[in-house]
Length: 207
Ligand SMILES: CC(C)(COP(=O)(O)OP(=O)(O)OC[C@H]1O[C@@H](n2cnc3c(N)ncnc32)[C@H](O)[C@@H]1OP(=O)(O)O)[C@@H](O)C(=O)NCCC(=O)NCCS
Image (cartoon, rainbow, N blue to C red; front, side, top):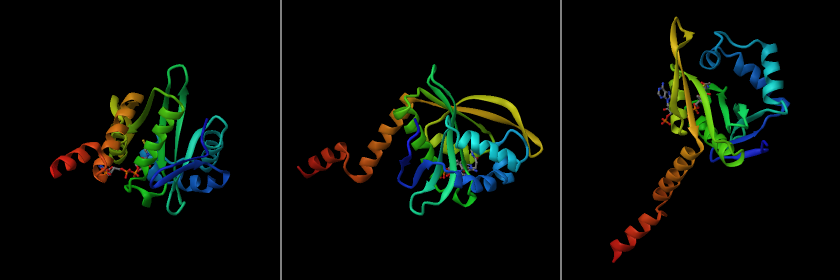
């Protein structure tokens, strides 16, 4: 069900190996990662991280892949589906780039795009959803770029930094993903000058 690797332009998603555990210890002990990711207010304990890693990252049923920078092979994070619902064709998406210096460079959005390709093209899912805290503006921006739209709001569901914040539910359907992918392909071809529209335009301008 889970491929060995999925190649993107700047990231490669690969199966996790036990040797990735030390990175998880670091990432999930980081208070800022916990602030952005967890319903609980503090970071995970070491034993919790180990249990999470063995069950949800390496486990046989797991749909988690490691995010590596393609150029350097550096491990920077992890992305996964949980709650796969075969009857209704849906899954819940999670992503954590644990290496903070790798944020804001487009890696997260590309990893999400690759995971959506896996969900819709290979797993045949119909919809993918996620939940994100409203103060996590970087994550919301990244998800929007991958085509997720706001589906609902759990109002004031998260207590953080001395106040309540909304938890946003975002989702994307298979058809929406295919439409977005087609639009991106057209955009790329226009950028390359290889789109049929441009070819016709240049032919007629020369006539
Ligand atoms: C959320 C996460 C996966 C995004 O991946 P990333 O590689 O950092 O994000 P990208 O560079 O692909 O895209 C981020 C976008 O948000 C924008 N952005 C960054 N900070 C922002 C802010 N404060 N407000 C609005 N937009 C912001 C960036 O400009 C970028 O958009 P652009 O490419 O159009 O300029 C990653 O930052 C991460 O794992 N963070 C820590 C854990 C986490 O928050 N996980 C998600 C929990 S739901």
